[in-house]
Every structure is written in C-alpha cells, then in structure tokens.
Image (cartoon, rainbow, N blue to C red; front, side, top):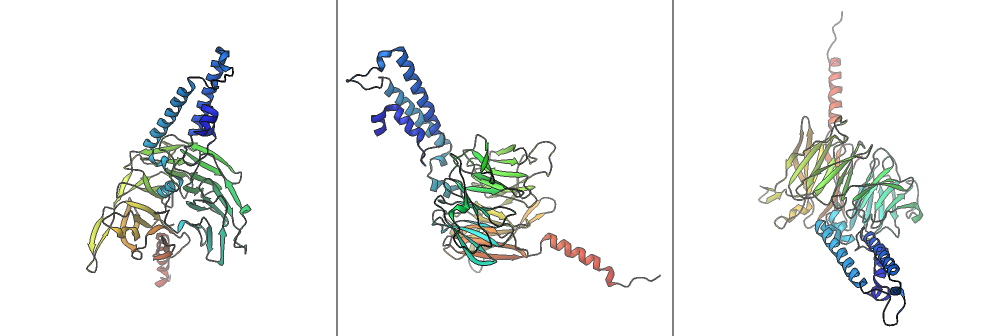
Length: 470
C-alpha cells in the first residue's frame, strides 16, 4: 500500500517485478514486467494524444482517472492467475519448508534430526545432513569427521556423491546447489567455505532432488516449483535447461546405472523418462496419483515405481537399443507386486503389513528390494517397518517376499538405502527420527558368485576321476 500511495500503479508493478520472495511464483515477476510495460505505453500514448494531461496540477496527482481502474484490473488478473495455478498445482502455494517436506525422500523432514543421507558409490563413506544445516562426512578408513558449513547451505534436502571421484559432493539447498570438494587425505575437520562451488539458477528452488551421471561429470537437479530440469556441467558452472510444460514441476530424479536414461517424476499424475544422448523424452500419464518412489535395475533396463494412492509396484521394461523410438520403453506398465495390507499371527500377536508405498530401493546387484510404507490411523507399526523381497529376473520380473525388518517401538523410520560396496550380500542402512543410523546385513550369494562357483565345480569334476590311459 505504501508503494501504491507514493508511486502509483507503476511503483507497485516495479516492486512486484523486483520481488524475490518465497511466496511469489517464478512467473509473477514476468507478468508484472509485462503489465508495467503496458501501463507505461498507455501512459505515453495518452500523453501524446492529450498533452495537457501531463501538465502538473496542484489539485490533482500525475495519475489519470482511469489508472486506478487499470490497476484494479491488473491486480485481479494476477490474483486470478495465481489462484488458477494454485488450484491446478496446490504444492505451488506451499512454503519452501513444506514443499521440501512433501517431496523429499525423508518421511518427516521437518522433525527428523537427519535431513539427508547418501553413501559414496565406490568407497565405504557417507554424508549426513543435520537439522542445523551442517553436513558431516564419515569414512570407514579414517576417524576424521569433516564438518561442512556454508551461509547458503540452508534447508538441505538431498545429497549426492559424484561417480569416479572420491571428493566431490553435491548438496541440494533452498536457493542453490553447493558442490563441495573435500580432500579425503586432508586432516582438516572444517573445510573452508571457499571449497564449495555455488550453482544457482533463477526460479530453481527449493532443490529437492539431485542425480549424477554415472558416466561423467553431469549433474541433474530438480525443484517441484520449476517445470525445468537442469543439467549442469559442473566444471564450467553452466547448465542446460530442459523444460517441458505440464506436471507443475519436477520432484524426483533417478539416473539409470548405465547412464542411458533419466527418470523425472512430477507433482502430478505423470512422469517422464529422458534419453541422455539427444535429450528427448517420453511421458507416462494417467497414474493413480503422483509417482511416490522409483528405482532402476542395475542394467538400466527395468524401472520399478509406485504411486501415492495405490499399494502396487509397477515395472517398465526398456530395450537396450531401440529401433522404433529414442526411449525404447514399454507403452504400458506391468503390475509386479500387490502390497495390499495383510495380517498374520506371530507369538499371540497380530502383525499387519502392507499398504501404500513410502519409498523403495534396490541393492547394487538388483537381487534385494526394500520397501517402506506410509503409516495409517489403524496401523502405526508401518512407520518403523521395511519389507524385503527377493528379486528374480528369469523370464519376467518376480518379487518374492522374504521377510521384514522392524525398528524399536515408537521410533520412526525416516529413510533407508543400501551400502553399494558391501560384497557379502546387501547391507541395509536405516535412518531414524531420533538421529540414529542402524545397519542390517543381508548375507547371501549373488547370482554372479553362485554361477562362478557352479562353473568352478563343474570344471573340477574331471579331476576327481581317474583318466583312461591309452
């Protein structure tokens, strides 16, 4: 109102155009700039037709009689467009913190002591983001714990280690992405802020998902408030904007292990899969709610996903090389597991398990799948439980339930993942609301090791019998 009284309509529109607050959408300043240009053009046109109207008058201000009407009309249009956009995509009216809590992989981001967690893909080392906006790095080969802090490191929602590098860590923040380079041989526990590279793009925030290219130095970033997905050339500090209208933003990213495809979920009933050579995409629509969780098979040819409103895991198969289209994916998803709630007796106690999927993850060999569930009013145990499946891929993908892991009563599971370098089966890592991190080893022989043992045994059989002498 102060800008209106002091500067009139142009002042208000200039203030909106220059505004950079959390409550304004990324396109509002552009609309304000366009309205400001129209108002200035009309003012100049009106003044050229009627020069006396630009003369000063002690009894009147410089604005014409129709300016307030135009201001009211412009304000009504802005408000109507805001309400329309907000009704189509309700998440756009959320605060940064609420948006992160809605779309991050952490179950309850606001209450959790740990805000993000990531294993290094090649060495037993992990990064943990805490509630105080610090990031700590723990290594199994050293007792030194690095503590990363930066003034822009706020509202951390995701962490991602670069492949084929021991020191590069990407941190998703409220207004930017920080690229830390932490020397693993350094004895310093507090790297300088100058060790962090800042990647920022107007309107791209809060960043809720990151994914490194398994083959090189590209980094993909996503924000539910931005319809563009950014592909960063980190070495140059520049990005390529991949924008597709529809979906209301980009919420989750998953780069396939072979580097050929990039999965991008949206806050709406649709997701896209991009091929990474020419950056063309194909979309899958008419989902029952937005995509809640997704993961790739180790060879990059199978995508598992679940939606927010169905207790079902779907699969999409992709050809290694497609001759009919660039993406090479199945046109329709196949149901591979029904996770509807079931009950069974165990030691005079009824255990209920199943329901809507919260998150899921495959281990490095693709032979164990872990799934967590959304809690409901009738079953609070789901908030501390993870179901385990054996994954068979003989002819069709087959998920065989093999058990579940349950935490301490009253403690809520925030997130989980598999440690990628564990070579005796699978190591499930579970992050809890009180800040504890627990490990559950799943010992088994991988199909590769089992096949190798069988081959060695078959080759040793002739040596166990006497050979016929001629």
